[in-house]
Figure 1 (tube, rainbow, N blue to C red):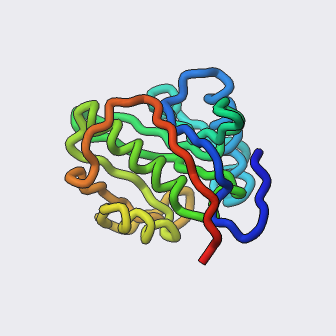
Figure 2: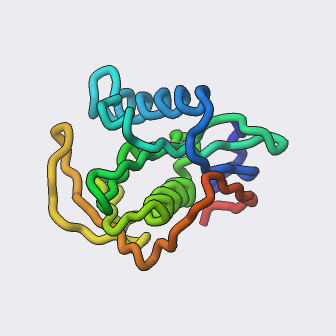
Figure 3: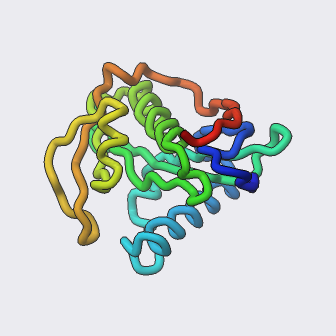
Amino acid sequence: MTPMIGPFRCPPGDYRIKHVSERWERQTCAVLRRAVFCGEQGLFERDDADALDRLALPIAAIACVAGMPDQVVGTVRIHQDQPGLWRGSRLAVHADYRRSAWLGSELIVHAVRTAHARGCHRFLAQVQVQNVRLFEALHWHSLRAIEVAGRPHMLMEADLAHYPPRREDDIAFYSSLRRAA
């Protein structure tokens, strides 16, 4: 893991956002989800795994060291609910990488663009209320308030006009060092 030095928005370095293809990626995404949804948030007792995990496409954000994958620092999953209707769920970012919304935003963008490339005409997600503003900034709109695992959420829909199809399974980018404002 890249150490946090000073008040930076995110650790600098190379990152990849990719469709999970390796066993270690799948296992580490599951560990991260459990840490966030069970350990930190208490949404689930011991495990957040469900039947959708067999159907969904998991996507991982991976921090790299010297160009090599090092640590899964974020994840989300997508699945087609019915022809043209896709859903995203289980968006989780490692606590050390939450200082800026860019990593969560990139996961959201990649998820919706991937679904769009696979025939999505409508993309929905159940968003925790504290994350609604982030999704609104990414061109999502609220449909209705709902409750998930006893907690308030918002059912939201992505505006696909802002998400051109992305056919690449793996994208790389570099985050430079930026001081927090």
